Length: 124
Image 1 (spheres, rainbow, N blue to C red):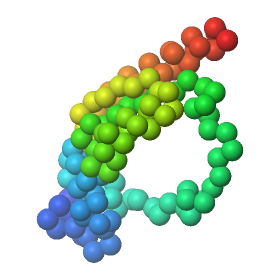
Image 2: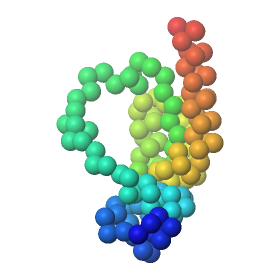
Image 3: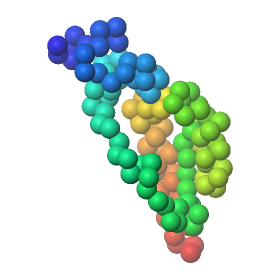
Image 4: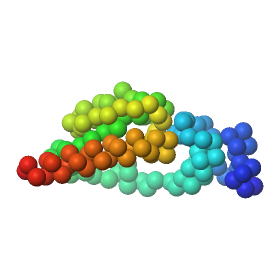
């Protein structure tokens, strides 16, 4: 079955869980979302067992782009994480896959952070 024949209603047998995909990339076109789902790889157990001795956000400036319509991490939880890190926050509508659905917004947030980091480094 080629990509042209794959739809949300006709997923391939080896596809990532359809419901998870619909939540993860809710604002991404079906073909792209399907490709994203099919190309996922399992994350390592180290993500759960690794130890962080000194989080960078405790000593370095941080920025956070809240995805207001994220169905994987609720916006309220994102705001809480950003607050804990002391991040400068921007919020936009969109799913967990903002980097695909709203690349210009993500690029703008990165550029803003890069400018802020450069200014902070010069002032230090």
